[in-house]
Length: 197
Image (cartoon, rainbow, N blue to C red):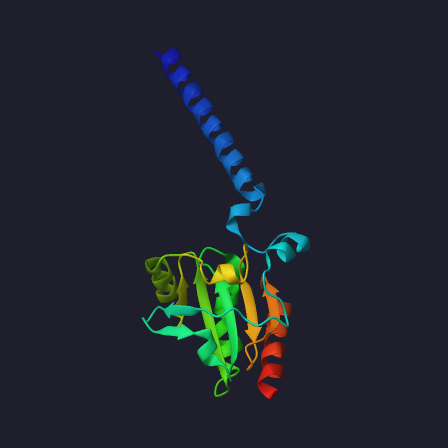
């Protein structure tokens, strides 16, 4: 009887050690796993970003009509005379989330009362996904939907977030891929300069 109990304890200890080894391997895999290329975040080589960018400063911004979450439709060309910030983003993208959290205070509030129109456009996601995210985050600003990426494909072939500042004449004055403090400052400068003209 004593041998049977001892054997059971040894079996339990072996199973516990095996489970711990598997758990540690999983944790290590998660920590050291490379960023997935399919995530389409802008953590890529500069030449790769350049090759996926279809519009540049000086280009006329490709026209589009976007449906907003509230059901309204906005056509870019109807906004001539205003400065427009178009921001392509996705709910799963960490830099996009960072940019969206900065959008209200850093852009909308900062330029309140000016001729700025902000169009954050969700790329490649269903309405339900975007609605849940916006509600969860408590954002009160309008958000556009581009589930089939037909708008995005006029501007780029890969990677989000992408921010495009368009002047009053409909010309692109600034394009950024990714998001950090420097890009936030550059977007602010491009908007401010465009509003002064």
